[in-house]
Amino acid sequence: MKDERYERELRALSIELVKLQRDVIASGRKVLVIVEGRDAAGKDGLIKTLTAHLSPRESRIVALGKPTSARTRSGTSSAGSRSSPRPAKSSSSTAAGTTAPASSA
Image (tube, rainbow, N blue to C red; front, side):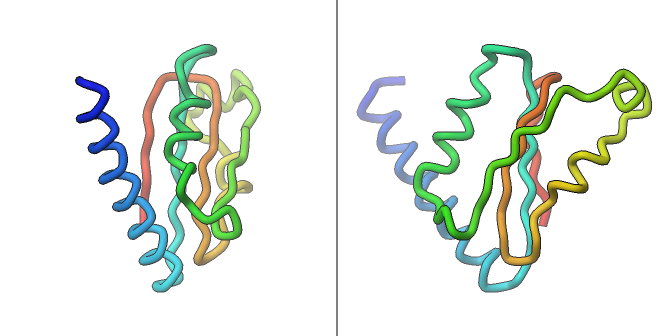
């Protein structure tokens, strides 16, 4: 993708993300984004890009530790529920694993 086209697309998507954040705040909903991936998979760059234009007062980033082998086997993560955002907040979390961004309302 050419630089100019990339920048134009990134700007348009950033505007939509800010609109989403405003809607989430206004409605009192929560959004949790979990970014998983191996070391050097680009998680930090993705999170910086996603949060660049969001209000720091209304969002937070939580870095979770590597899951224990028992938690990996069970497929559950109580650490994610402890770090989930309060109403009208958005949050991003990072953990080791495979890349799988997700959100819910």
